[in-house]
Image (cartoon, rainbow, N blue to C red; front, top):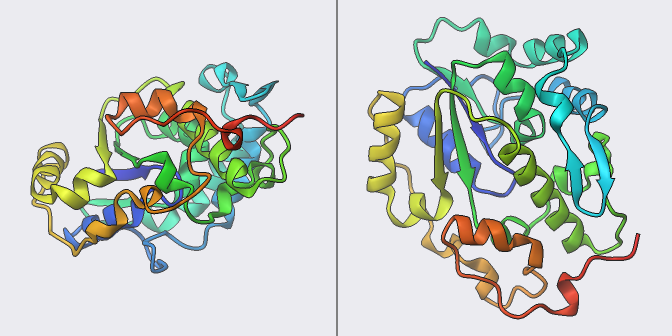
Length: 251
């Protein structure tokens, strides 16, 4: 069994990586404290290769259609295999990896590894953009988007791009969507779902209930109108009335 985690940085994917490791899944070596497989450079380079084939239509609209039909460049495949070398060559019966930037190349990861198990890790986007992450500026990975000097807006756009990219990709054969909040507040129930999906017993790890709903505690600028479809789809508390903070900046 091989598994990977799909989810934007700051969505709490480290909790899933640590859970898998504690459950006997080989998640690669070396790792950092977040449970990311290191070194990440080959994956970062692969992100920039795929980005060349994403068409920005303006505003917050990208065309991902070419990704699903075109031949995947050998350069991309070689980079992914280089990044995953220790995992792919491991004799461990249960193995996988976690790196948030995997989400930026998910359409082609799905095509390269159609039979592995994918965990889509969802978190309230207002909490996802609470802190900084390497993927905040999509331009660093070759992805065009509306220019803005507003750091929080930049993070929100990055979140939307990655959410749209995942949702525009045909689901793989083995796909499980989990909410970070459910893992923290209803861990036993979530682990039961994971055990059924992965076919192995799952270990418990410590969780922090205060990590849920941080945006409610005076986190100004966390709400954006374009979060609404995802908030509704995943059962999160809906946004209040729009403010000037969630308007798109002029291009």
